[in-house]
Length: 222
Ligand code: DX5
Ligand code: ZN
Picture (cartoon, protein in one colour):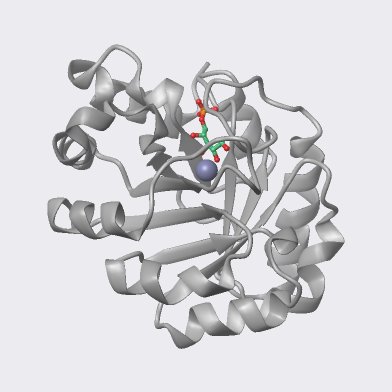
């Protein structure tokens, strides 16, 4: 069943020179999760942050740190991100040779496990490992950068996964990431998403606008 809609601002669009302040402002503004995009310049063509930054951010919020790992290989870094204070670690099936083992090691590290599907990755990739996942992330852009245009075929994938999740009877978050704005938020919610990642749209207008941005995105109003 679709759970209450939660909003996860992506700190990729924050002012990196004052990340702690930005996290606190988003927390106060009503963010549900804080989405942290980790990129290695290899799995995706951009480089962002590592476990040390997650550890530095942890004292600034008690909300869920939703850490999206766009790195390969991913296995050597799972324990480090868990120890740094991540609540959810989401991986891509392409980021290691043994997805099932990778998800097992995330659970063994004591955090929730997410699986992310790129626009070119089929829904079927999730089926053999669904028992191990707490969150499924549908990428609605190719990962690597904020500010890209929403790829509408993600909506079919969300509808398909909504049925798969409802059929399995467990509360698995269905998250969508990329190009979420005031228009596409409503489309994604209607297709079954219950966690929306938004970078550009959450941070636009600066701190004074964060609360209104979150409320409007969560409501899915155009
Ligand atoms: C893209 C990242 C996203 C990104 C979304 O690779 O996974 O989380 O920050 O940015 P917007 O919302 O601007 O498309
Ligand atoms: Zn992301």
